[in-house]
Image (tube, rainbow, N blue to C red; front, side, top):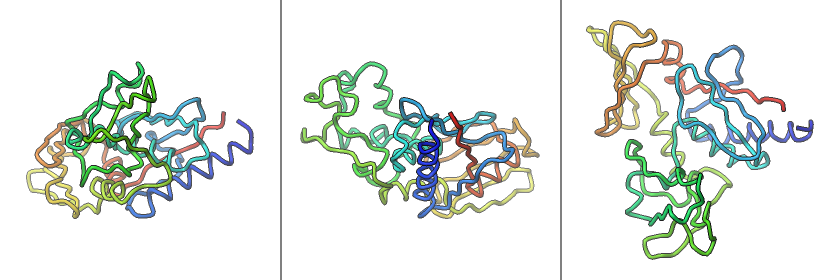
Length: 242
């Protein structure tokens, strides 16, 4: 990567961060010695791991280095946000025919019942594909609206629905502890979402139960410092020179 492209990439990574942080409590901190962080690498495609896992470095790959909103799209995947067309209620709004998508791309249209859509289905979301994305034949769209009409996507910025969703996930957090060692962290934005940390300590391996609406999912607890990073909504990052 040339020095000019590197500087362009770095500028647009920061624009993507600013785009996300401008209307949310999420902050992006350049990595020093943190063991879990995001790396950005210039490649021939755009991709990111989904969500954050203990002891994993999230490697985000970017081809469109001149588009801050595309970078933001991939960063939001690392934040645990799935494509809009994958939300469990999507069939109330769109028709998806994965047989019309090229092999190797069909996972982008999977329906994820463990993920909760927040607010109304958002055709303007930066996480939404357009009808012909990954289509084998552009005249045969993979997705249409219920009336059969097609739709386009936008990659200029986050929608109001995108910001609402991030604030639902990473909203202001209140932490309280019980006498029996169970810690509860609940967002002020949604009474139906909380994190219960059970056990007498916050060391690695302690169990937690995540509740979003009526869904309960057990996960291994992060370390105490990692929990504090989640509470403060800090994500660490570096840009790899290639």
